[in-house]
Image (tube, rainbow, N blue to C red; front, side):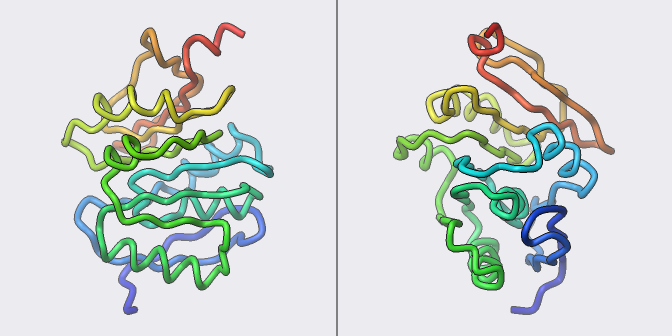
Amino acid sequence: MAASNRVRIGGGEWRSRLLDFPDVPGLRPTPDRVRQTLFNWLGQDLHGLNCLDLFSGTGVMGFEALSRGAAQAVMVEKSLPAVKSLQANKTLLQADKARILQQDALQFLAQNRELFNIIFVDPPYQQGWLPKLLPALATHLANQGYVYVEAEYVLESDGVWQVHKHGKAGNVFYHLLKLADESAN
């Protein structure tokens, strides 16, 4: 596969490995600096955690989680060129704990009943995804789990979600959310 873009895994077993990914409209990998901040928030060791990478795109979030010891990373991506790239990178890294699904995110959430400790969500901007996704994510989050969200705007705590941590890099606002009823504990 001729790759036009690359992204680097920042830590763990596959640290510094480069992942190729195709030009796909709306596909924008999470910047290295933002990923470094996120994994500092989460802790560098993710052993035993189940992760979901919705709108997986380059797969860097899921592969980074696996590199840091996650038990599994389910990568959901609708774009066929991106899915083919994810499969090639899974083979390259011998990432047996990655499960790649070519599927719409909302369809996956409606059909799947798994619980995840960490859910990565970086949907295409300007398409109104978050109001549709956030209610569905609550039923997929394990006890004391986190949802990481990238958006083109700041998210506020509401009755369901508590913004645990947040930051901004360029035009990207990134957030670590917890269920509001767990934040009181």
